[in-house]
Image (cartoon, rainbow, N blue to C red; front, top):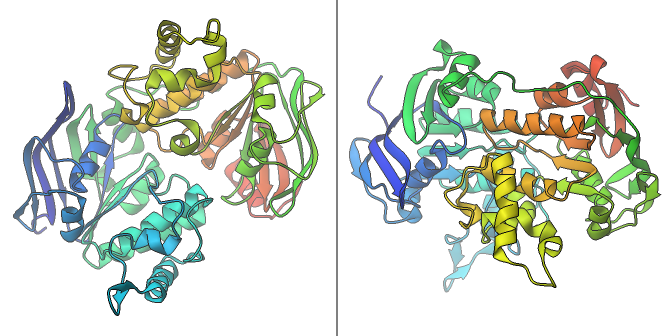
Length: 498
């Protein structure tokens, strides 16, 4: 094999007293897809930001084709041919899709006026290449996570990159969209690009990548050919221990009905959705992206209004369009998009963890810091949130720890019904096991859990019943004993109906 296209050697990076990377090495070869795996907090995101030019290393070297690389900022990285698709989309909500893709490098005509028609044409070409149907003039605001991710992918492809870094690009994509993305990645790889693929989904890692590098606690652990590894070996290297069970489902006693939906309908989105979730039960709401799963739970929690039907909590009908009433009735919602909908990124860990309970923690209308810190510390310890200080902005935490803060925020309200939308999206295998253990424990304590998930192993491993949606309608209600990948996918693709 010829020398690497891009190489990192002895790279270290610290933030204050915290060493994010220590003596890391990585080699990316032209025409190869290389996986980077590790738990949240292993240093993967910091390494990606160094490659993107957002952070400068404190020590070590980067080389491209054997020549040293020093980035003054992200523009230098892009000029060197390095494009990054981040885990969390970072679009300007009030600009169009085309304007987001070509931000800062819009095609010009005449007296340096932006050529909007040319920008739309190039955007349409990128979407055709990706095999997706998005209007270039559509505002980014309101796009689903999947569509936002596709816009980010199109933006990266527009740079004609020699090195493509993909940081959890498939976390919110359906199986069809993942295959479409992989086809593009393979095409780039086969045309001589180096692809760095970061994912917690091992089936994708082994399907796409030729080599796998494992990181743990900010350090390089190993680099091996994918064909010489197994999932178990990779997991052991990632976590430094055995993960006893990824799906620690406890047997529970299913009790009284807690949440009932009766003929819930929102025109053009979902229709005639009826189901019940009982105390002590984990019910999974499965289906392909766009089937209406998230829209149903948003309507249940009062974020979106519905046209007809009923939401009943413990025998009482819940009013439409009022999250406040939903919370008062004992509902809690952990949303799919934790950064935009679950957290206030500029606020501290402790402030985020106590937001829904600020009034109950206040005395005579005043919120004292000691009460807030005490409450936040209790939940941080229970959920094993890894943070230097609870007073630090929640944006400084890894994705898995941010997810734990969202869970802490809602669990502190002692919900009777917990709704979780993609609870383990973009988090590592060790944290996934912790979240699954928590959900199972809550169900055993009598909480009714409604879980939306796009990961079939998670659905099959955790659910007592699987509700499958197809094109806005409930297509199947499958008990745990009968649920398997084939039955769920048949219902999700409209091959069977409830």
